[in-house]
Image 1 (cartoon, one colour):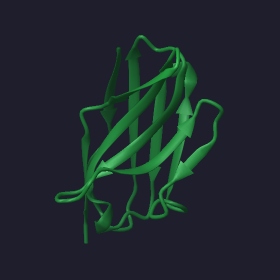
Image 2: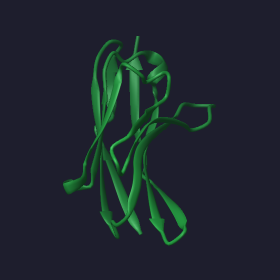
Image 3: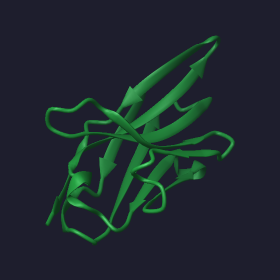
Length: 119
């Protein structure tokens, strides 16, 4: 089992910045990817950004150029730097980890952290 704890959500004005962090603990081995998803009220959860074990990154179109994902493997932490925030970024942000065990991938989720961007 992998436990995830997120930090860094809050209220910010449009144009501002926030940094989210997620610390993983527990049976941490063969982590294939770490990432961030978000869910706004009435909408489905969507990918924001992810980073693979090899360091490759993938961003949602809405995040490109504004958000940066990074990973500190030594600390089992994934960070999401969010700049130039807009009200449409308001959502609950969830940390996600994908762990490979034999031929199966297991996904773990954090409890979520609220990000609110005021206009």
